[in-house]
Image (cartoon, rainbow, N blue to C red; front, side, top):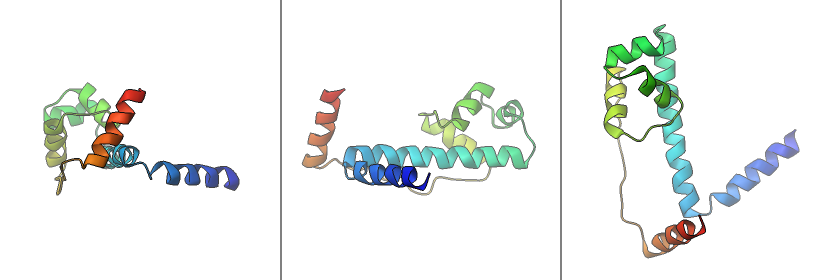
Length: 111
């Protein structure tokens, strides 16, 4: 089993050299952390998804999607996090370098 995990770690290390992949990987990591915080809060306070949804005035379906890390609406996430006592400290939005633009363009053409 250890050999298999080493191969996965080496594969990920190699993939993370690609700036486009790295950015997507980091975004998914942030989404996972947000989802974990929301799930932890709900469990700690013995709330169902429906009860949490009512508390923060969103649908149960939205809570379910958020807990799965399947979200793209920043305002909803911010609303949920504020309701459970968290805030987003720092979001970095920057211009892509010429090299990064070329990498993104190549990835989009490959799809």
